Image (tube, rainbow, N blue to C red):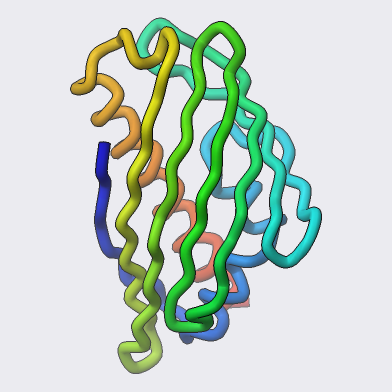
Length: 150
C-alpha cells in the first residue's frame, strides 16, 4: 500500500521541522497514540490503539528516523505489532519546501500489513490509512499553526 499527499503549513520550515521532531507534538497528532517515548534523536517507541473496520488493536512499535537530509527532507521506518490483530511495517519520505512564510510538506509512505488486519481487504485498509494520515497531518498543521499564533 502506498500513500502520498502534500499540505501547506502556515509556519517557517525550521519551525515545521522542529515540530516533526518533537515527541509531545507528535503524540498529540498521531491518531490513537497513548504513549510516545524518545529513546534518542533517531529512535522512538510508540503505543497506539487503532480501530480498522471491526478490528481494534493496541500496537506497540518502534520508529527510526534518518535525518541525513535535514532540514529539507527526512525519512522514517517503523514496525508495530498488534498481537492477534496482526502487524505492520513501513516507512515514509518527507520533504519540506519553504514557500514565503509557509512550508509545503510532502510525504510518500509505504506500508505492509499482516495478520487479521490483512484479511479485512485492501480497500478498507487503504481508506483507513488515508483517513489516519489525513487526520495526523491536519492535527499537525493545527498544532504548528497554534504555536505560530501564540
